[in-house]
Structures are given as C-alpha cells and as structure tokens.
Length: 410
Ligand code: PLP
Image (tube, rainbow, N blue to C red; front, side, top):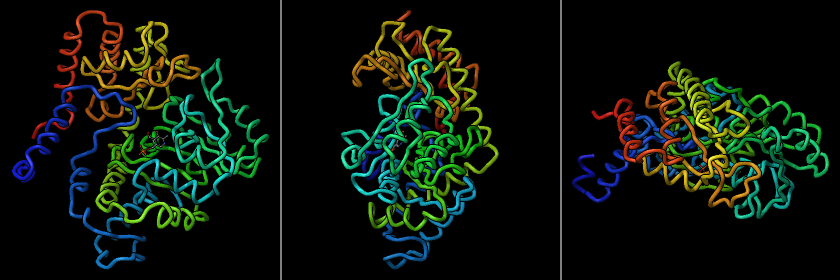
C-alpha cells in the first residue's frame, strides 16, 4: 500500500476512505460481506497479468502452468465443499454465471419459469431490461398474498400450463428457505431443467446453515462475494452430465480470458469456507438475522413472511408511514447502510418502495452477536422513525463499530 500511496496518492486515498467508511458504519446490505485480508491479497496479485483462455491443462496460451494450479485448487476445493460433480470457477459475476447457465441449457425464445423480480427474484430471472427477459419467454411465479411465501401450487400450475424448458428458483430478497425438492418434482413432471440461483445463500450452504440445493438441481449458480465472503465473482456447480456444456457456455461462448487473480481468491475463499470456523460463522449469521428480525418486529417494523430462515429479512414499513427510500436515507445519515427494497405486492414504485432489506453477513464477520442485533434494531428504528436526534444514533453506531471493527487496524 505504501507503494500505491507514493505512485498514485489520489487512488490510495479512495482506498483509505473506503476502509474508513467500512469501519465507521454498520453494513446491513444483505448482499455484501467483508472479504478476508488473505482473499484481498490474492486479488491484488500478479495473477491479474495472465491470459489463460481455456481450462487447466487445456489453455490457448503458453505459460499457464502456474495459474493452472490456482484454478485446480479452486475447483477441487469447491467440488469437495459443495459435494458437486463439477464446478466452473471462471464466471466474472453472478449475472455472468446465469448467462452461461441459460446459454448451456436453452435457445433464445425458449420458455423459462422464474420468480418475479417484484417478489424477490433477480434481474437475470426474466426482467425485460435484462438479456433474460429480452431473449427468453419468461413466465413469472410469485409469493402468496397471505403467507408471503412461494406459492408452490402456482409454480406447478404455471409449469403444467407453459411447459418451460427451465425452471429457476433462488432469489435476491426472499427470507425463507426454498423447498428444492418440490421444485425438482415440478421440473421432472414437465421435463424442465432446474436451475437454482444460490447467489445469496451459497455461503450458508457451505457452512451447513441451510440445506444444499446440489442434490436437487441440474445447475447451481452462485456468487462468491456475498455470504461466501470471497472475492467479487461467480461460479457454477452442475451434474457430471452437464459439465462439458457448462464449461463451453462459460468459455468460449460468454467469456474469454478468466480473471486468474479472482480465481486464486476464490480458491482462498473456498479454503476458508471449508474450515470449522466458517460453519460457526454461517450459523451465527442466521442466528443474528433471526434476532435482528425479531427485534425489528418488536419495534413495529413488520418482517415480510413473519420472519427469516436466512441471512436477510425484508421489512414492510407501511405501518410506520415511511417509504423504503426515506428509511434508506435516514439510516445512512446515522451511518447504517442498507437498501430500500420492494415488498411483495408493493404499492410504491421500485425507486421508492415500501420496504427495506437488512442482512447480517457483514456484522457477523465483525464478531457481533445477538446483543448487538438488539441494539442495531433499536438504532434502525430510531433512525427510520426519527425519534430523537440522528447524531445520538450516529454516536451509538460509532461506539458499536469501535467495539467490533471491520478490518481492525494493524
Ligand atoms: N442472482 C441473484 C439471486 C442475486 O441476488 C445476484 C446479485 O445480487 C445475482 C444473481 C448477480 O450477481 P452479480 O451482481 O455478481 O452479477
């Protein structure tokens, strides 16, 4: 870092400011985490220089013997960690992993059944502004109005009516466990592929805190930077039968040169996630999430579906007369970083929303537990409802983060 400071003080300052921002606030964005110094060291390495189109032992460039070892480590560790027949560790992101999964299994114009974005799905599950909605015929299922959980009867009815070539489950803002066995049955009934997008939950799967989709899915796509706590990136697990198709869909169909520094960092993250400490971490993420959600509910902030089984909760703010956008802004003023999020059947537009999404991956990485979750809930409630001065909330946020710093000094 001393070198960067000498060579480019402006960029060095950005890096320093971002560390200070992380240290000074509470990061409740459910899709974020704090990667370890070891992961960050691998990212900031000379592996960024190397072109390595192809796969270990089958490259289109010379000089790949060393980076091959990084990719082999990543593959072997991920296959062991998830008990998968095959893994591709090259996708640049979760969206790239999904693009490759579509490319491997479908042709443009094929029908896909996926969760509506407005009910917790993801852009890549059929939004009209994304490749998925533009190039595929996407039919959306959602959650029930009464339970706010996936309507499995609707999933089956829609599958029987539209005969999709692929069914997707997995979401960006769904706090409950997904019944992969039911999705498998429906997919088998109509002869569809089952893609589980585990971008959010893969770290919880790695740590055994939620059930694995691997025994049920044909393909599992994931991100490495959310609950898994690795570098920003993606990956794909699949059955042996689909291995060659998935690999060809990543390279050469949707990507060319892999980011070998990111692949090495993924290997580090898979290694970290294989350790007993990570199992304890994943369990604590869920324990904290339940505690935070319960404490927010006690403050009059209604959790969608009544609670959570995962690292995140969706909070309906309509009872407080505050929009998601207002809550996001008010919390940020106090140093609490979270995002506005549509709730199912939201009367507000997506830029405003009636809800917020909160998650515990970062604060759990910082070593916080149930007591801190209760305090955070009361701070969120005070910021959102503007009870008392925002400065006093900000002071308590500072005290909390000093006790449990992100990236402790030294
Ligand atoms: N799939 C789901 C369910 C997600 O929540 C996300 C990201 O939030 C993605 C895919 C895309 O990941 P990325 O931002 O790495 O492209």
